[in-house]
Each structure stands twice: as structure tokens, then as C-alpha cells.
Image (cartoon, rainbow, N blue to C red; front, side, top):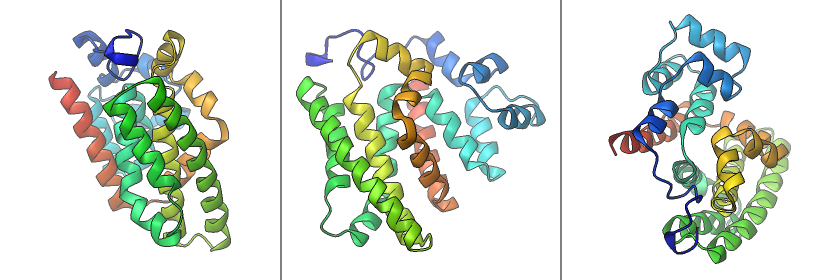
Length: 232
């Protein structure tokens, strides 16, 4: 979305009240449309099919289903919200990454590149974000291998989480306004997830390694983003 005018740019698209309600009201059809797993659907039904997204996410966290909570909230976000969420997530673990890799600036650069797109979404900033995302992905894979070699130590796992979150933020920012087709794909998520491929799976794995307190903090930030949108 150059110069703030391209209508199909997902970063600044203004959603109607109806569209916002569709993303925050949980129904069976909605969960099926975002490809919820059978275990997730069963869990939702066991909890008496709550329709309020915020209540359901809180319930997931109460039951230690942080994976469900994170999975759901990112699928209820628009593109800009997701980039903000990924940036925040990466920043929480950035000190851990830079402690383990004091001379590696790739994760910090990816975070900065994603923030630059949010501030000024142009072809130049998106291109820079794409390049930074590739670098962050390389850093993440390196951290992943190191974490495995270090017997899943907390410090190495945190470093890996930071790198994957930074990759996710920069990658999403890079593709935030490429085409109307991409904007539609973002809403459906399936094409976006397919494009992420193995990296997306690795990022999910890194998320699982985070502490409960950290997951609480990140997901609560995500809910705050969603509440801000709901009030608009």
C-alpha cells in the first residue's frame, strides 16, 4: 500500500462492524472455516460453545491450552494486528537471543523492518522487510539446531522463539500489500499458512517452548489489540 491509498492493502483496511463481529464471534462454521482441528472443536463444545472470542481465549489459558489460545487469536486478527502481535512477541525474547548471539543483529533488524512497514507501508519498506525476514529465518533455523544440541535449554529455546517471531513479523509485513489476492488469502489464512510452509510449523514449535507466564503476557497483548479494534 504505497502512499496510503491502495484499497487492497491489508495494513490499513478499515473493517465494518459486521466484519469485526465475524472475526470475534465464535461459531462452528467460523471454526471450520479456519480449519480448527477435531480436538479443538471438541474442546469448544465441551465448554458449551462460547461465542465470545475473548472469553474463549481466557478459558483456553485457564486450562493451559495456550496453543489453542494463540492459534485462535492470530486467526481472528487482521494483517496489521498480526504484525503488531508478532513484533511484540519477538521483542519479549529479543534480549535472550542477543545474550546467546551477541553479535547477531538479524532478529533485531527483522523487528525494525516490520515496524518500518507499519509506520510507512511502501514497496521499499516491504522489500526491506522481505530481505530481513529471510535473514531472520536463517537465524531461527540456526538457533533451532543449537537449541536441540543444547538439550532444549531455556536460553536457546528463547533465542529460537525470538527469531521465529521476528521472521513472522517481517514476512507478514513484506507481503502486507502485494495484491488483492493476498489480502483475500490473509483473511482465509490457508494460502498464507501454505506459503509459510515448514517455517510456520517451526515457529509454532518454538511458541510451545515458551513459559506459561510469557504466553500469558503475549496473548493478553493480542487481546488488547483486538479490543482496540472492537471499539472502533
